[in-house]
Every structure is written in structure tokens, then in C-alpha cells.
Image (cartoon, rainbow, N blue to C red; front, side):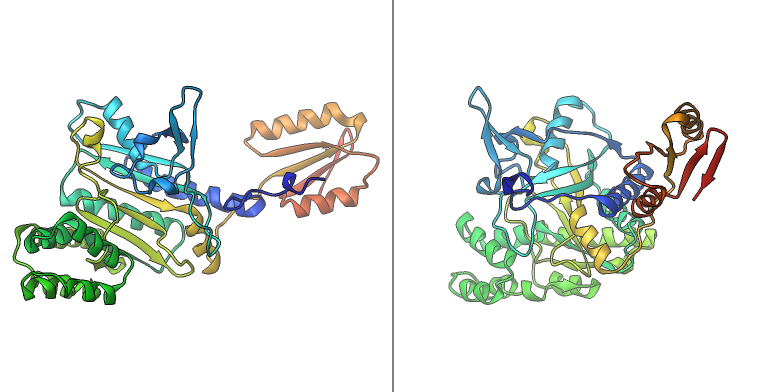
Length: 402
């Protein structure tokens, strides 16, 4: 037999049996939290036109997307991110709406990146988008919703790190740096190469206090005390307003009782011009990367023709499931299925019995006994497949339960 008939391509895999049930259960728990916050479901296509996701609209580089062509030679891509699709949909279906719109989604996304450390090319996201609200209260609600979702999934120890891209933008403008220099500094900070950052900043012809501020990103993480320190490094209005907004978000999160799950990191800078304010990531034990990413993207919707400030998040379900497994968190599964086993002569009674159980909302697998297998084999099968019980028709009027 051709080996390729039994194997998946590199970067994708099958999920089955208990692992699949646990993933579906966790997604259901998270979705229930989103419903509690009044988010409404939306489904967008798995592939769209390339322009929906190009660099100034999406969070993936062109060479990281799976591209193909339709019969009219249009370039299509498997979605690397769902947020741009939501933005397109809102601009199309809610062009005049000015009051808040809350939408949530769950689906698979695709990234064509180098395979390393077992990273997948197809992965599941579930998330929410809050549109038409530019307030710090909206930022706080999104982060509170994320924390609530992670708690509902069973996590107890995790941390949401919050940044603010306007703090960085304000520093760049204050130093009078051009786009090319800004991009190089972004790359150093994004890759956490603070030695390279220091070396590069020292070559710039800017005042020493501006150099000191730009070289300080290595230490700009922690609690409220860090914000006090960051405030002393800048004098421009944009950076100061960014710090003030982070304090407002923190104050609101204390009202939710979630402050212990929150810290700050001003070195959290996206490589693309995707986010415009608050950004955040969630980390826990058992994964090497963030299990949730999000932030404010006030300019994205305008690229589709609608001016609408927005903030949102995406939980990376596969990474979350890895964390749940490695932290030995129990995901309670429903094993209430009933196996109804019968011989050919008792078929009418067995079908009636199965229909009765299903009418009572019980899950039933109806199996006609084969002469090639004895009763014990079916009992072993029921045990292996996690049935709650096996109901065996020994005769039309006699059912034995195992």
C-alpha cells in the first residue's frame, strides 16, 4: 500500500478519540464564556482573496501563507488569521452601525512556516472581536473575557502580559527617526535581541536621553512600578497617554478581581502595522509560546471602508490543549453512551428500545450481533470505546445490562 495513503503531510495531524473529545469540550467551555459576554457567532470562509490578508492588513508575511489560484487566476489564500475576515464582514454587513458589535468565532487557520519544535501548519483558534468601542473599558473587558475563558478551560496558573504600541511609536516620533530605522529597532525588540538594540541605538545621532529611553526596553516589564519607571523615560504626549491608558485598564481589571493574572511588558511590539494601542499575550506552563494573543486594531477596519475602533483576541486551542495535558488538568468527558446489542431475530424490539432511549435524550449505538464475534468481545469493545453500559437482548423480552 502507498505509505502516503496513511500519513498526513508535514505540519498537520489527525486528532481523534479522547483527545478530540477533550478539545471539543474545551472549545465549548470557552464558547459558553463568550456567550456570557454577549458575543454573537460568525463564520467566515477558510480561504479568501490574498488582498484580505496582505501585510498591512494581516498578521502574517506573504511567504508564510498557503496560496493558490481560482479559475479566473485570482490569488487566494488559506486564512492565516481570522480577524481580517471579521473586519471585512463587519464593513460589508454593518457599514452604518456606530454602537458596539461583539462577534466571536472558532475555526482553523493556516501558516506555511518552517517546521520546528513540532509546530503545526494548521491550528485552531477561538476568539472574540469588540468593534465600535475605543474606550479603555473595552480593552479591559476583552482581557477580562480572556482570563474568564482560560479559567473556564481549567487553567489556574497563567499570566496575561499587556503592552502598548503607542508608547513605542511616541518614542520613535520623539527621537525623529525614519521608517527604516524604526523597522530595525522593531526587529531587535521583537526578537528580544537587546544587545543588538543597544549597539544599533548607540550609532544613532539623537540626544542621549532618547538613546537611554530606546535602550531601556529590556527592563520595561513588570507591575505598576514599571509603569512609573517608563513614565520617567519619555516626555511626548503619545507615550504618556499610552501609560495612562494601561493604568485605566489595570484599574478596571481590579474591579473584575483579575489583577493577579496581569503584568505589563512594553517591549511587546508587533512586526506589522496591525495593532494601534493595547496589545496582550497569555502564557502558562507547558508551552513555549503564547496561548492567547490580542490587542487593539483601530486602523484595520478602515482598510475595508468602515471607520471603526476595534479590539479582539484569539486563543490558540492546540497550544492550550498541550498546556492542559502537561499540567495534568482534568477535562471531564461525557461517557454516557449506551451500546444496544441484539441478535437478528430480536431486531424489531431492539430498534424500538433504542428509539425509546434516544427519545429520552440518551446516546445509543445499535449493533446487530455477528456470528464471528462472541458476547465477551462486544463487552470488551464497549469498555475500550468508553460506553457507559451495554444492553444485550438475550431474547425479545429479556435485556441484560453490563
